[in-house]
Length: 361
Image 1 (cartoon, rainbow, N blue to C red):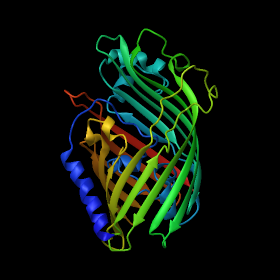
Image 2: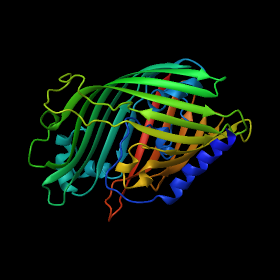
Image 3: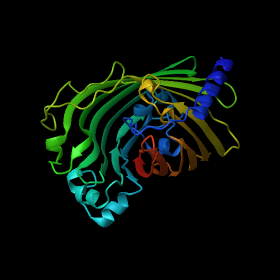
Image 4: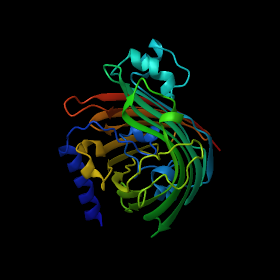
């Protein structure tokens, strides 16, 4: 088994080193948190808190105690977002209608903003939570006629279970997500037409399931392999409609996919530990992605007494970094990462900044 673990790790590193191309489409996951983004987007083999419910339900088996997260707002903005507001103020950063005038003043500049919350209760092998988010990406064309728009508003009830096997060396977890989604996905939305979501969005309810597996070897460094099958059987949003908005169209179908990762966890001193991980996302849909670099992620974390954390990594050929200050009840996190939003001929980085504050008991 030791040989299999190291072969898998070397294969992932090989892929990350030699598969570099370029594409224009941004890949968006259902959930991505500050810690993950600081570590290059690599999550599934290392998550060990309430976010395991969404990232990898098998990691619920890593939790030691039961605790609840009461309040955990997470904000994210792109490099140009402040400039949009400076040029033309707006009241709602997640409303396309509100920011349209600012987009017109900064044509061909990319706007990005996101807000998410995840109050939850988790313990070893079980968790329950309520997830909500707003996400808006927009860019007006040079002639001002169209707006490349992606908007998402999710409300999801999440339930997760995990089974520990072979003294915890194998963990097998499942989650179920009941998702109410409002979505706009239109790269050529008319700038002169209606921009309110009631007129341009799709709405629907879907039921989604993820299955996660973690294999941890009982050796020094605890070499770990992990895999998550996302949206088992595919997730469509036609279970119900008209819950929050009345539309004739439904949000995009989400294809079933698989993410795989490897990690090691060195212990340096009694108060200093580190985490190293690499991850390959989209194993089943990789044929649809000409830019294989978008599927590759790697990160590291230095842990100083479970109080102060430094993080860094690689995400889609761009660097990432972050830090965290944690106490028994409070958590402050910061991250910056680069996202590829350019074209084949002109690769373009959108530098993003994420902040999170959480209160737990």
